[in-house]
Image 1 (tube, protein in one colour):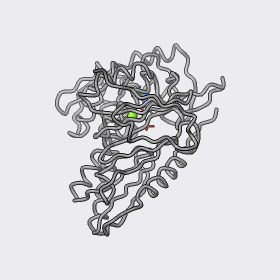
Image 2: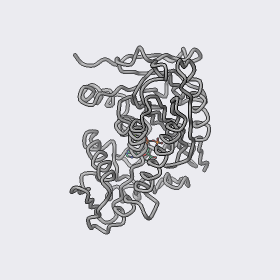
Image 3: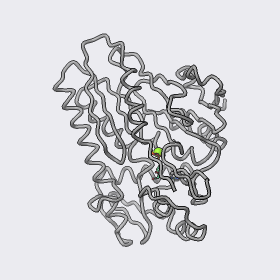
Image 4: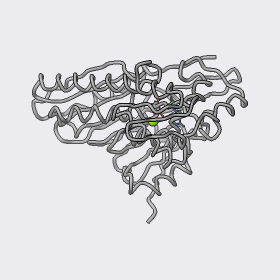
Length: 353
Ligand code: ADP
Ligand code: MG
């Protein structure tokens, strides 16, 4: 079986997009960047400021914050909070405040999405080999047995104490990077920076607009090839994409299996969606929703948006396997299809009046 990892390409591509998106400055702001590998992905943080010392200190602090959260939230690091919770033997485990908050948030989103987001899916992810990039197809009996150890409703949270039943495991793979991005944004803002772009493995979190005050213009990667299918203009927003085109494997049966799993079946999602991009203020909301809307499929995801968009304030761009683009009405004027993707049909999703 072939394990395919195209993250380096994504990183290089998104980096070049960021660099081209920054032209047209009017002040004396300079761009300062820091690239590093963390949370199993490439990150590039770019801040704009006139003061080199301030910019570099902001970058250093943001990177340190990511490292600190990675050490708390890693599922494999034996010193992490999550590892301690997963090996608590059915007893309450005390975690840091940040960890309790992200777990609480993941559980709330699991409930809101009716279990499409399932933070306790780790045993099933392991059986498919997605945690070690050594993929295999588990038997249906094995999946059924492992699904007995899955269920967000059974996680107990009391303040900073988390209790998991023996054999259950929490994993923040679907929400951790978005939440870490939010905290990096806070650090950067606190350092006095008003214009910055954080690229977290292709997910973007923007602080303010470009140095001249105009919107950032982001390229949205095509799920069908190496290029982009469109651009999106935003300021002060997070833009997070989930898809099955980046981390997947081709089984011995010739079928393509992606890394996002439907908790109802324990099998990789295969519902006609190629990618889901969520745009909102908070990265953690974007991250939780991009994964769970991908699991729901187009029809249920559109219903979810109609039902929750006023309370949660988010927008979505869906791309289907048959190359159609569905986007929510609030962002239709901010999105532009690439010239060479004109054959892709655009449908606007309208809120219920
Ligand atoms: P990425 O981390 O690649 O940016 P996502 O945010 O969509 O993509 O998260 C996918 C990761 O979340 C998977 O690699 C896996 O660790 C985990 N996961 C897969 N399916 C689910 C699910 N239904 N609910 C929660 N986590 C999931
Ligand atoms: Mg996610």
